[in-house]
Length: 383
Image (cartoon, rainbow, N blue to C red):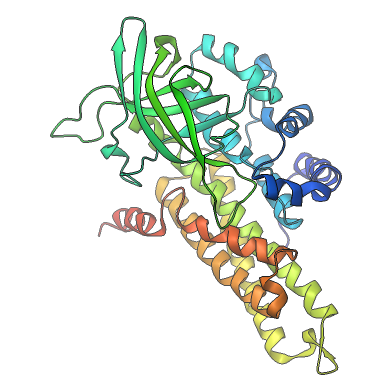
């Protein structure tokens, strides 16, 4: 079906990104996988290309666009060629909305130019070893001491945590109340070079191997009060505000992954011969590809509607939850079926379908597990 979600500007941007990926990413991507992340200078190349500044206002060095669809174009083009840009989705899709929405004018002038250029990469630290999805139960504390906060605690599963120059750390600045366990959380923007700030293990994952994921610890880290993002004690409210966009971003990546899996499978089965016939000629192959393509079309339609709603400011938390839930489940089914069509070669990492398979599993976990999303949707239904 014809897509109407993108305009001429989006498509011109798509061509630029496609050419960039072919020249700067595809030839060296296996090296990134081995290292566990792209080289630091790659982020400066993205900055020069303008990727980090698309939605940053012009006065801070950005392009001043407001559409999420440029980020979607990047996700689609990366998936199309079986690669990614490392931890940049956290930098742009998670951290930036917080800085734009809650940063003071002084903070924006201080941080956004480096953010846009790639000179300052960012991460956000919420999850702790003992909390998981229960952010209200976090134990990391930040106690006021004059014109500083004293930060103590630990975080885990921090995407971009190895190379980050600044990390948005969610910490408890005051105790929770019996009426509200979520009260008392704040967001501090922490310089990763601060004394007492430590990057622990780089966690080895089964997928997304170019996205550095780390454990962090904080021992009496002194954070200037002027690095508080927004108001003290409103951190949980701020985190909830950006969840819709975060979940939409994951849904787009998941749909794009499923669409790419179909394309990779199509190319493989047309070329592969079994019993003197191409794999594409077997009825089972045709039926499987027909099923997968239909599911991808349904996911694409839902994603497109969600992107339009988001650009209009109308994407609700429940609608974002539905979009992520459906698209990640489609991704899981489609990628698995397309790997099966590759036979034994689908299990070999030099084939893109293997990378899509291992990368796909986390989609139903991060940004809100499928179980959490179902709870949100059920609540909207009144049950």
